[in-house]
Amino acid sequence: SNIIIPQWIDGTVTDSMFFKFLVEKNAIMLPDGQKISQQSEIPDWYKTNGKWWSERKITDSEFINGLQYLVNQRIVKA
Image (cartoon, rainbow, N blue to C red; front, side, top):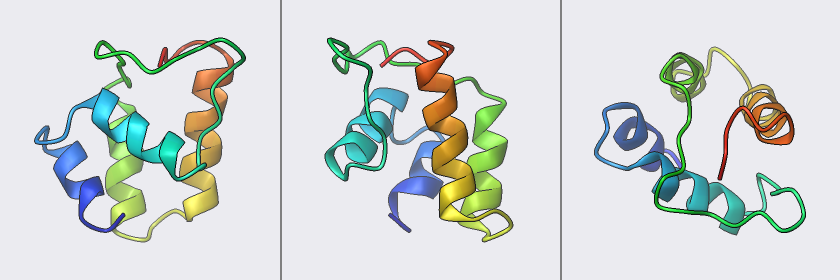
C-alpha cells in the first residue's frame, strides 16, 4: 500500500482503481449490491487524509474508517 497511496494522491491511480485495491484487500466493505464502477469518486478533500496517512500522521484505521463511513453514507459511491 505504500506505493499506491502517493499515486492515488497525485492522480496517477484513479479513485476507482484505489477503491478496487482497498476492496480487494478487504479494507473497505461495499454496501450490499454495490459494485465498483469506473466512475468511483472520492472527494478531493479526502485526499488530504490520504496524504496524512502516507506521512503516518493518521493511522491506517483512522483513514480506512473515515473512508468506510463515506461509503456507508453513500457520500462516496463505489
